[in-house]
Length: 81
Image 1: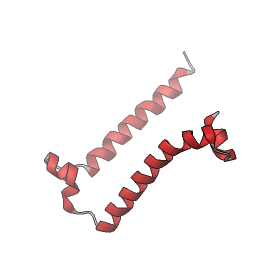
Image 2: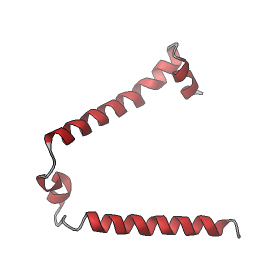
Image 3: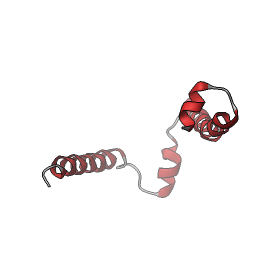
């Protein structure tokens, strides 16, 4: 059981720090509207970059398996195995 002790300590420390960090950042959010709209404090540049990143991620997840199956890209073939 000694090998589990460090893992339990790291896990509990990580959970505690995430809860603390979330509590500090989320203290201004009072309603679900504040949560989903970010209290309308975000710039259009940040929102645009977020949309582009989400779209790129989705296209990568959808496209890589097909490219690995029928394509000739060595990196895609490594990802598929």
